[in-house]
Length: 111
Length: 111
Image (cartoon, rainbow over all chains, first blue to last red; front, side, top):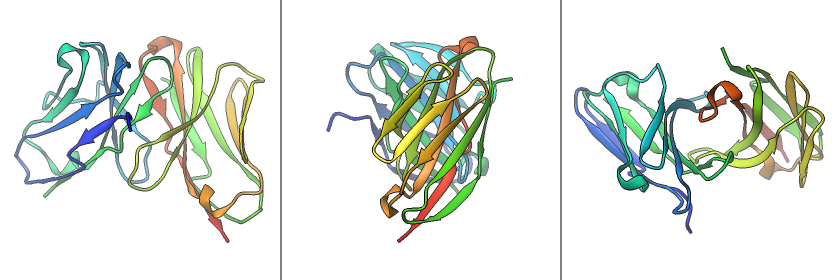
């Protein structure tokens, strides 16, 4: 299966700790997106990369969040000093055009 | 501000009972409208892209249509395996990289 891969699938952390998630996109896709989804809501845009360049970042994204995509391949999303409100599903998607292909997400629980 | 509103929030149908889901949007120039299906614990799965008013797309029991202000996802003679959350999303000319999602419609089909 050459779909979008996200690791870990689940992460439980204590408030104040830092966490990092990884996304491996479909290999030929140059665009990569991070979204956050809470229960009963649709995915909320966080940030977008074209190759290694981070071209757009949501105004809702606090400075505790940072994302990288070195060499335009895999991407990491780091959350520093986690808060209970950060508990959500973090989704990664990749595309070569308009169609987004999503991974199955990383579910973060902050206790 | 670009916005997507889906209705109803939840819909319960009997197997074979046809219905429609609504997606209303407000964007400053529509580049594309997308429908996705999401099963519990998984990432959204792409269904359709519509680009201009009057366009229709079909796949098995699903048909998507588009007007200048809204899109409908028609479900004909649904089966229990069609139970899922259906998400609508738009890509606007004002932000070609960002795709904005609605909150989704949770569809449940009873056998």
